[in-house]
Amino acid sequence: MCRPGFESDLAAEIQDKASACGVFGFVRARAGDGFVVFEGHEPAAGRALLNKLSFADVVFARQWLLVIEHFPALPVDDRVGPLVQSLSGGQSLSGLPFRHVW
Image 1 (cartoon, one colour):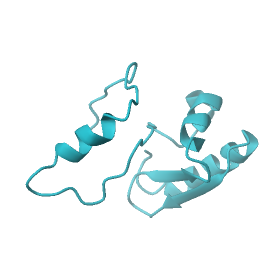
Image 2: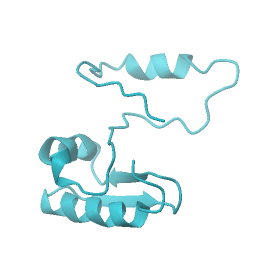
Image 3: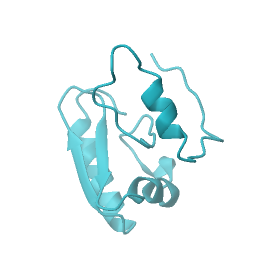
């Protein structure tokens, strides 16, 4: 996440730092969204990047998080079921901080 208007700066920064860490992928960014998405070429790339890169070394990011699964269209009648099913795969969520962001 970044300040709206700084998506291209964050995208370039993440791409550069990911390459320096040996984590390869691409960044999706749209002006005004206030966030960018790094998609690694390998399934574990996101976690590897978060483990190798210190948040203190990133200038344009306000916050970052790891997406373990993307749900572009949850069913209207059951929005929780697919989430529960996804988490039943054994992913650990311990140690994740919760922040209320306005």
